[in-house]
Image (cartoon, one colour):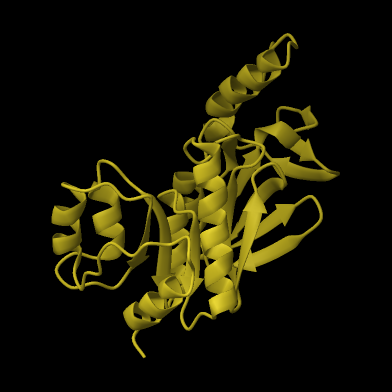
Length: 233
């Protein structure tokens, strides 16, 4: 049964939900949303004419969005666009209800999705699973060809994302390159020397071409904590 029909069935079984309209392509949905206001939207990524992610990126006034997809890799991109949740096909009614509950909690807040840095997260694919990592737990990332090791406070992951991807994805004021093979969370830097930085007993090389940008970021971070930010490298 197509996901659209499953969603129709699931929505009909939840009294609090009122199905306004179903669309088979994003262009028709775009026209509808330009004239109507809705609280939430279930959005398939693979749509004709305009993909779900492209559609989401051009929406000026976004409802709260739950993505549906058969491909976990795309969920990561959707997360960057502030979707509330994602449903990996095939999804059960229980999993559908979890997504609806997340939307309901967000509507009760009456505010946009929080961007508190301590709670901000990234979603990674580890094997066949999707894992959410809080930025406040992510200490540093080390390149291994087209793959990367992700070192967190209590976990270590090996994933098929390049260091370039992480450099472009993570907040540039918090995650700083120290070397062509390392990206560090400035919040975890314990000591700095002219040749390396120390994070949790790990000495990470500090390359010459990265020193200037690292120095600026480190000083800003220290000053934000009320600590004099002098650093000579």
